[in-house]
Amino acid sequence: MKAAIIVFPGSNCDRDVAVALGACLGRRPLMVWHRDTTLPDLDLIVVPGGFSYGDYLRCGAMAAHSPVMREVKARAERGVRVLGICNGFQILTEAGLLPGALMRNRDLRFVCRDVSLKVETDQSDFTRKYQPGQVVRMPIAHAEGNFFADADTLAAIEDQGQVAFRYCQADGTVDAAANPNGAQGNIAGLFNPGRTVLGLMPHPERLAEDLLGGSDGKTMFESLVESLS
Image (cartoon, rainbow, N blue to C red; front, side, top):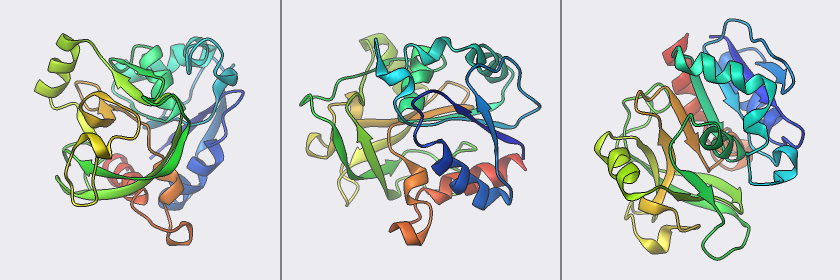
């Protein structure tokens, strides 16, 4: 499997992803600067977390127009898998690769803590090693993770099974109390209709080995390596 991680000014989780993905892949992924206009042959592109361009305008709004994103969009249209984590999720929505938008958290505060997530499906290259209904733990760290879409878009997302993860209680109950940011439908992770693009606010790379306190996030990278190798 050939993988690359896009690096923007302000990215701060790019190397964390490189370590987590590289441990499963057996070699370090390619690091691609945002000004690059070409990409080699790839099976996976990761758009990492951080504060691209200082989060000016809106989170991800400027990064979505970086030179490299034209090529990321072209590859995504050809079926190359794309994973956007936190700020990467915001960039993917701003670039039109995923529906909806990420708005300010419901209480207008930055939230940084572990959350429980309910796995909605194992029918994707990103989630194949999870079990449907499984509850996993991952950290969040964001001020703009409140997923919003208009009623028709939200209905289409649900009808087409595009939700990958929902915020939940430790026992799997999906309710308002488990929602850290006000996201509609408790949506924490979202696919495109073909399930070849995934954006999620939680950080799987931050719980990808036992030394970090857990390995639920490692399963996502193992899923990708198994699917795309």
